[in-house]
Image 1: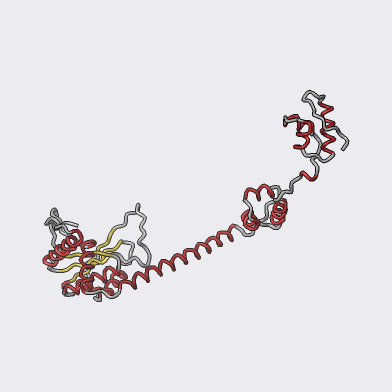
Image 2 (image 1 turned 90 degrees about the vertical axis):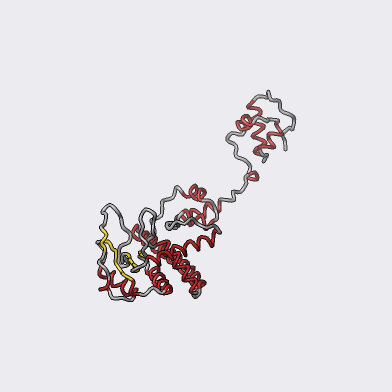
Length: 296
């Protein structure tokens, strides 16, 4: 090395200082080494001294992402999406965008109609899996109940009636047993409960309540079959008028309206139901409820 290593004053002529800096650079000095050699610690001045002089090869750090960038561009040219490239290369989506945004967008693999169909198929598969899981849970729960004892059915029936049956109120005295529901399973349990209580089927009266848009005759046959009676013994059907401003959900072949089951001469039975319900409440709370037949 032929250059002097003497200290350089900050007041040296700039061109002289630049010549020394350039010479050091061409000998392979790094920017830091030139700074220390010439004692030029002002970065702006140092950059001006080095203007136009490339760094030596040994100071260039390899870019670890160069290979990823080239691979990303190659995949993009093959028609890959940003998401696929991101997953394949394990890099961020923003990096992929930066590397390949100058390349033409690949043609879509599917038409809009095909994309919609794929989406519907995916959703159908997802919902089918959810339905299977839901049904498995219900089957397991149903199997855990086992056979009902008479007491089980008795208490179930009392609670069921008090939730869904007609009740006497201080402002509307009607000690009658009347039950209305649209769920076939609920109706089966209710009829079995009446049988348990010894209520003769001859004391039961049936009536259909259904919207005007429903199939009244088909619904009446359905409920008659469930109750084990002939449809001609049903009382006059109650037709409910449809409010055109209301969007009804209970439509279609499964809509069968509601079955109304009344018990003739049911005042005494109603009072017993009221008392049984009070007993259930007392059993869980330990508090004697007030003597109101309308309590819940």
